[in-house]
Each structure stands twice: as structure tokens, then as C-alpha cells.
Image (cartoon, rainbow, N blue to C red; front, side):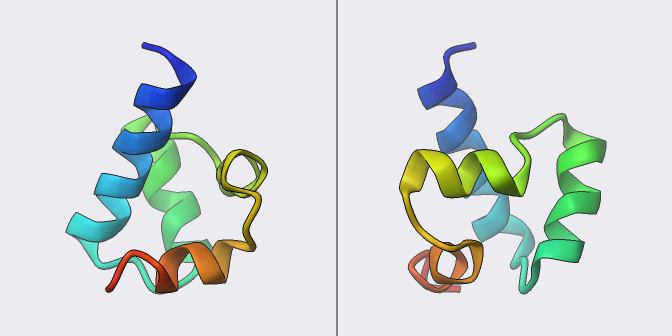
Length: 57
């Protein structure tokens, strides 16, 4: 799996699970083997909370 695929998978899970905060996402990321919040912030160049808001959740 490429970084881009992992990134998209992580964003999709945020949308599907209606993740509202970083704690909730961290639990899901460990369980589902997703990118961690810091990696998502680095790749997107956005704060995690802004990233969630931009997912139209």
C-alpha cells in the first residue's frame, strides 16, 4: 500500500466512522492499522481538527 492509498483509506474511515476528535481517531487508527494523526497532518499540511471539518462530517 502506498502512502497515498493509506492517506485516502484513513480519510475514508474518518468519514465512515464520523470521527469527531483526535482521541477517537487514535483508537480507530490503532485498531484498523491506519495512518496516525501526525502523519495525516503532515501529508495534508492541515491541523487534524481542520482536516476533520473538511471531510464534511
